[in-house]
Image (cartoon, rainbow, N blue to C red; front, side, top):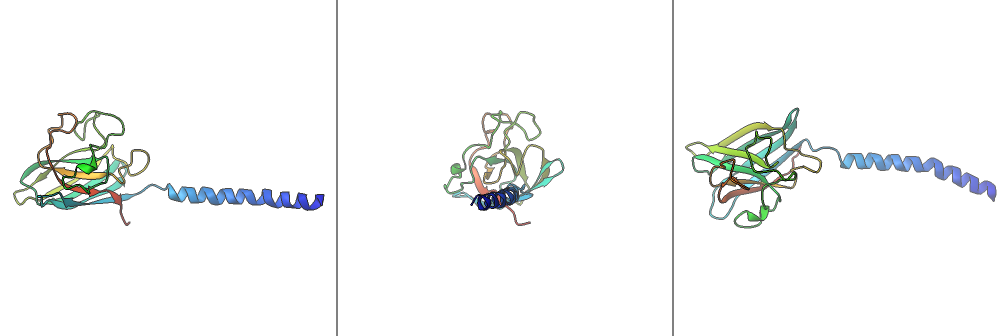
Length: 182
């Protein structure tokens, strides 16, 4: 009987490391960084603003590419908000600006800014806006990830100083940031 117990112990001890390796591999796959994300912008009540935004991890941060239509000509506040909840008619279910570090509101190139402060998007005479830049603060993984957060386009220009929102006015469009198909 003692011999059988020793054999079971040897088998059990030799199998346990394999189970651990399988678990580590599985956990690693679940925590792999997201390389690209997307948000489809839908208009809030009374608005016709719509479009899309992609976020892609690049060498110096996250490349943000936005194409938005239905705007009035000029600059419009453009932010990442706390929640990817676009269920309210006004877009307010998306919460405030995404600010995991408790910073002040500021310009996208400021050292002291909300993570979600991505500035303004400027519409041409036809109401179309395009933005393409690399943001060094945004992240698609980790505790500062923007995955599942909201993208909001505002009615007015973000003045980049008024706390806590930049006085950018009503929310014209909302989209939830999700993992993009590669």
